[in-house]
Length: 237
Image 1 (cartoon, rainbow, N blue to C red):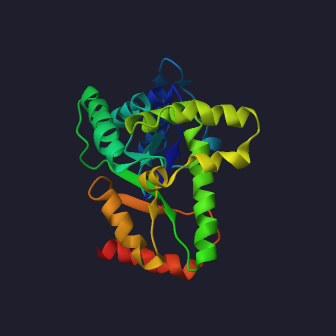
Image 2 (cartoon, helix red, strand yellow; image 1 turned 90 degrees about the vertical axis):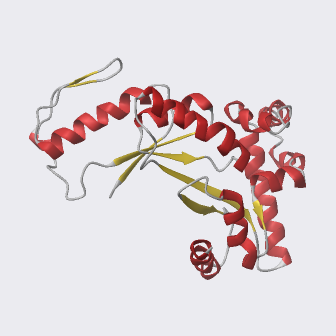
Image 3 (tube, helix red, strand yellow; image 1 turned 180 degrees about the horizontal axis):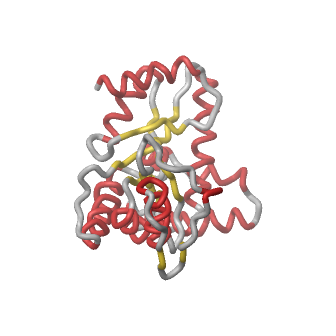
């Protein structure tokens, strides 16, 4: 099954039905007739019509952080991509209730709805590798934390005042200093920090039964063989 991954904007509550109308025209050979607030699609030329797919109509997954975008996903999508800049408490207390509100607005449940979470991980086979990974992930967290739309996660854990401070640093070009503001407690709150053989258990403990799928968000050089061992270990738990 193919999945269409869409990223947030204020009009996706209309773009998802528009896409479904187009895909429905291809799959079920019915005339295209979609007229919405933001989009109008009434012409499907043979040149752009690939015909029915053996895999059926794609599933739409939306990404988001704040409650409003998350509600849109619950209302119109088939799945949700949890942002790496999330915590178990935030997913449990903000994300999942927002998805449920959106689904209720559409008169449906979340049965069959997929949640995927790319979990940030700090790990390394050596002390040097771990130090490099630590610095890169703190940099990633600092960048996310400087974003006004992501302050909701920080606010949820009492770190809200960090966001405008980091934003001021971005405007001043003080990028190299920003990771210094990510203390060990905040790092552990937002990422799994573990030895390689404990990463899988750390991810399982972090996500629990909150999501259906996880992936490893590790934007630093690692041994691919090590990660190949992590994946089955996650499933084994």
